[in-house]
Image 1 (cartoon, one colour):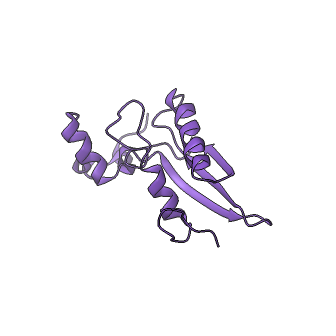
Image 2 (cartoon, rainbow, N blue to C red; image 1 turned 90 degrees about the horizontal axis):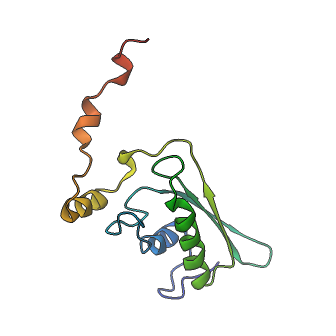
Length: 134
């Protein structure tokens, strides 16, 4: 079992997610990549030598987003700086990102920054399946 150097707690997905909360979105720096919902999953495996292999799965807010390579690099650099030697960042396009993945804290930060956050009530009242087919 590997432990966090700062807190002494066992390394798990929640600890890694906490580190990633320190990475700001390059286009809306008031939000972390976790607040924005870009980080979809973290997978941890221990190799034969006892090192942790980390895979961080991210989804862009839109296909072709130019910031994703920079975000992936920031993830790798941050985790390497913390001593993790085996880090993979996988970009996943499916399912497509949605504002529903944003954290409530992220929505509050957007509002304080002067950007209207998405309104959950709008999505709850939309019934796309009831639209006539063409």
